[in-house]
Image (cartoon, rainbow, N blue to C red; front, side, top):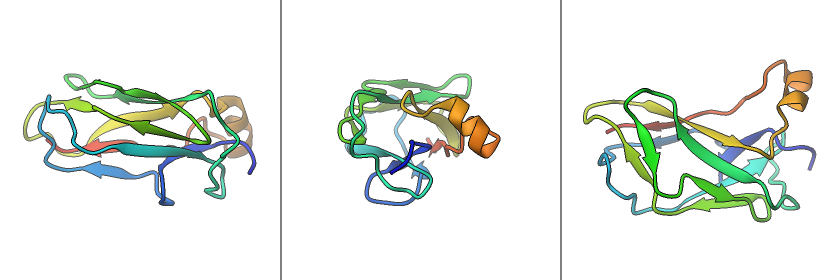
Length: 123
């Protein structure tokens, strides 16, 4: 594997995540396992020590609970996530990022600092 370029849902080739009918302020009853991958979607299993973070991008929304998780063998698991937003909001994007992804390398190779898809949450 080469250098990491994005975060995907573990066990898939997709970085697109959609959570529907989320109760605002309610702890999610599912674990969200995400992996750091290279351009060919290969998990960088040698990578440990970085972090994956989920953060709000829209005013009036937030992420509570464990919104940042340690990367171990290329993956991080989120527990006790709580998304907060106004009921009726649809496809609200939350940013997924990792300090394991080098923005300078991304800019040089792809002409952009991120090819990451957001997590879309509907309340």
